[in-house]
Structures are given as structure tokens and as C-alpha cells.
Length: 308
Image (tube, rainbow, N blue to C red; front, side, top):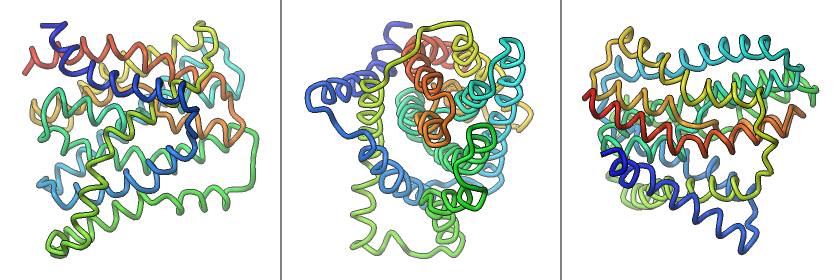
């Protein structure tokens, strides 16, 4: 059963990631362009579309947001303990915090949860994805700037936050849903939106493969171990009491716990690069956590399915 789960849940993800890796090796793809297409086109379209399509009570949506924010805070606390234990320099502490707080719930977690538990579970991840994206470009930006070498002031950082389309896609989706606007009846708009958002998962996995291909990881040493352990092992363990405390159903809990075990988000490496943090540590955290997640997420899916 373990091998069957790996074959049916994790193998499809890594097959597409591997395809992205091979395409980059052959054609030397431009990573920045792929990242911008994800951030400025696919993710906003996906969030806006699925907020309108997903039938979740507002109370449950708020609990999902609270869960996601709680995992971010707990991972920050865990990173502080690890940084003190290993006596890390300031830049490395910043990169450790970013690499553990923000996980790849989009181009990894979303297809993982969909393949493991179906499209009903994926609907929950819309609010996780939206919360994580907004948090990355608010909390993450300020954290990266405050601990890295300062590049501009807080006004510049706020400007970067306000330029993120995910925030506006989230607000627009909630606004349209609250007012019950008939967006889906606007065929000229709804059909192109549907076509774009449906391409997110495959395109995002290809992007992850290109990122893996272009990453030159540092040696796998002790400080990196702490990032991998916090991200892939400690995070889902901490998610267990959180889902009980917030009163989720078993099905919703399984989806949230599995998403919390996703590897480090690619955007954390981009933040470290932009704000002159420890880029080597950040890119290595993305690289190694993604590789090791092949084993950890398969094992977690096995345990969660047994629990269900």
C-alpha cells in the first residue's frame, strides 16, 4: 500500500517536476519569467475562480486562515530555537525563519492534496494558498528586510506588498461572492479565466522543476538539517493539535496536516536573494526539502489514510 500511494500520489508530482528539470537542462529556460507567470497570472486566476466556486462557510474559511497563520507563527518560534541552538549568524537566521515559516502549498501542496484526498480537499487549500501568498509578501517581506541588508525603506517594502496581485484576487473574489455577482454567467470572462486557472498545477510543477535544475545546493550540513526537520516533520506534528483546537472535521484535518508538511516555498529563496540574505542556505532548503518530501509526504499520506 505504501508503494501504491507513492505511485498514485507523489510519483505524478515528481514526474512533472522531473519534466521541468529535463526541459531546463535542454533549453535553459528563463526562471524569472516562469515565476512571474505564476505570481501574476496563474495564482490570482486560480484563487479568484475557486473562491467563487468553493462552497465553504465563512466560519470555516476563517478557521482555515487562523490555522495557516498559526503554523507560520509556530514555525517562526521553532526557527528561533534552532538558530540559537546552532549559533547561526544573522543572515542565516533570517533564511532559516523564511524557509520554515512559508511552505509550498501552491505548486506542490495543492496537487499533493488533490491527488491524495480529491477535489473536495483541494477546495480547502484555496484559503491556505491565499493566506500563505499574502503572508509571504507581507510578513515575509518585512522579516527579510529587517534581518537582511536593508535595500530601501519600509515604504518600498509596502509598495512591493501592494503590487502583489494575489491580494487583489482574494479581495475581489470575496467581494463578488458576498454580493452574489453572476460572474460565471459572463462567458466571455469566465471561460478564459477557467482555462488559465486550470493550468496552474501543471505549470507550477514545471516551474518547480526548473528551479530545482538551476539550484546549486550547499553541502547538507547541520544548520540545513534543522530547516528540513522543522519543515517536513515538526510542522505536520504541530498541525495535529491545531486542527483539533480549531474543530475541523477529519477530512479537512487530513488535508491541512498534509499541506503543512509541504517543502519550503520557492518564494523564500527569492526573498533572500532580493534582500541579500543567505541565498545559498535558502535555495538549499528549497532543494533538499523538496527531495526529502518524496519520502515524508508518502509516509504521511499513508498514516492519514489509515486514520481516516
